[in-house]
Length: 281
Image 1 (cartoon, one colour):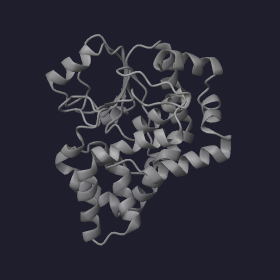
Image 2 (tube, helix red, strand yellow):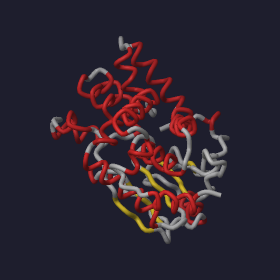
Image 3 (cartoon, one colour):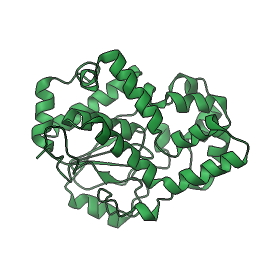
């Protein structure tokens, strides 16, 4: 997927050529005034297309763990390149929900095998597909509420805690939805406010701005309206409005994002303090 060249000077972007949406959570200031340490919490898209120079750069960061949120179906013909010295941990999450579960095997295969060369056709078809519209709208609530996704996300946070301040890289396919929610929860645990959390989430849309604009225009030219455009925002970018609604739902159900971390994510006050000791300065 093309990355807007105008946005490549954003300071958090990692200097890699063939890894999309690769950036550092380091540098954000949290509510108590401390700053997230740089070079320790790294997020990106898959590593299947990484160049040898990309891998060499990541190796130089002494990454201890690579957490992969993709399902086995997504990894077909897209296995991660290996970063020497890193331990790879699979935490597969199917964020497509019950509507996708009712899809035919052919539909699942087509969606899982999305490639750059056929992305135009896939997005155009999905935008006008009522089933895809439901999946797009429910993407983040699924990650937050689906028992399997909750279990995997809790395991990821535990993995970060147990890494004891060592660099960890986490990713899905495009580095935006499952990876985005993982970043939301990490930043919340570190004490970031909602504006900071949303700013990091929305950076995906800056990075993929050219593609979002291109596919939005094509959908509108094909007769699409708001429901169709929302699919583009969800499947090409990161749907900020949907995330805000999801965070509001968490507040309504649990009282706060912190309570969600201590509830379904099973973090204790001690866990949160350990995270902050290791990853803040």
